[in-house]
Length: 249
Image (cartoon, rainbow, N blue to C red; front, side, top):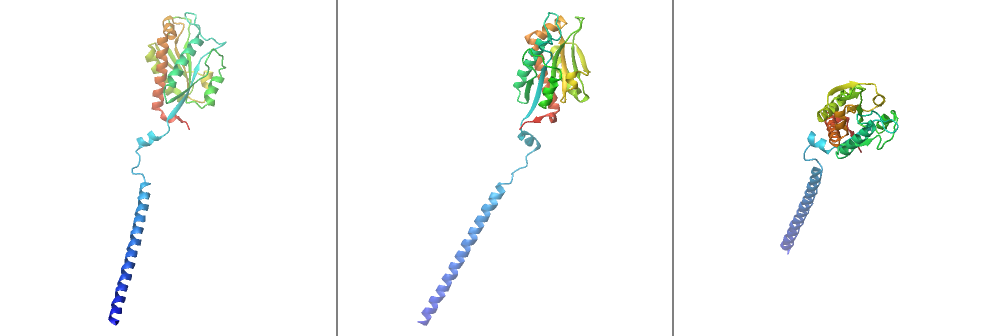
């Protein structure tokens, strides 16, 4: 009887040891699994790769350039009288509207017009429109005049030295598209340029008093070419000067 009780006690001890060991192993496995899952979640939160410079640029908000297109003259100010008697204010409005429509088709531009009809706007109000909206460019569109009908060509005016690159880029595109004489870019203290706090130039696209140039300037094809050249010039300028962009929220 004593021997039997001794064996029974021994089996009970072994069973208790076995049970304790089993519990210990279970607790250890549960802890290991939980720790593994926690590490897995932590690792998943870490980026798998650092974005390249190009990828980072592509993830930035789209850059939009505000362009204010100023159709010269208007209303009581008719501007130059062409060889055919056509007035400059109608030409500048027509071309400005074509430029506006082309810019609207480009995601990189937000165009604005200083006038949309035959309205007179004071000279100081035109740059103020661009200043108020913090535009990237103020572009004033004109056509030239001279008493000698044989005089022709394209001129572009700037006021401040930091606008020279804009003037030259735009000028080159318009001259190439129109095929008129290149009269160069020039410094001029014009009011619309002097009062502008944003990059500003004035384009004289050709001479209305030159019969050959007037025919092109007033024609649909000529205006289409001029408008496209202006848009292409703006695109090249901002591709070369991306830091000029305004990132819209």
